[in-house]
Figure (cartoon, rainbow, N blue to C red):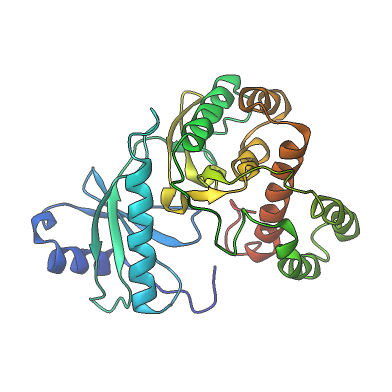
Length: 282
């Protein structure tokens, strides 16, 4: 999926686990088919999951990033009735793999790309409850300080221009440019940052019997535009449940439109970038 992407095999993970966590030597290692774009995922026994970053980067920066993800996961743990991963351990480079890596708890459920909850009103209520639970976490004076989604929509103009150029022949680019020109101008309207999950897409949501079972990839928990977690309305729901989500969240017109803008920004990058390498994401 990425230039210079690292190749990670089950044999490598077996060696890493055996060397660094000998207490788990007896546990089987199994690779997982995943639509994820950041980590290779392997099950370690029945209760654990190893996550190994796919893109080459600085070792110390990776270690700090994984530690920050673990801290965020601990902050969310138990703050909602829905399961979220619990960090268990951080591994170090070895066995030919050049980066730190992590182990967390494995959560049961079916990813929403395989069991589509889009028509489920009950799922919409669940998703709204999760978002409200996250918003209720005290940001303790923290505000958005990143360069990803969740700050100023207009700061993404350069990336969106790249997306439009790369999407020629795939999408109706003139129409989409007009949409972005309108969406990028939406103001915050005085809304303060709140805690957000930041990436409520199908690959990060587990479903059971049409209900929300668990939420994955929680390492991005942090303060941002309240509209950021509204992206789930478009990534996960059809029109009727989408309106249920809006009603439960109490979204006004401006917050709702900004949620659409963040979903649009995210979707524009997914199509051309993953068109050959990750069909489920596309």
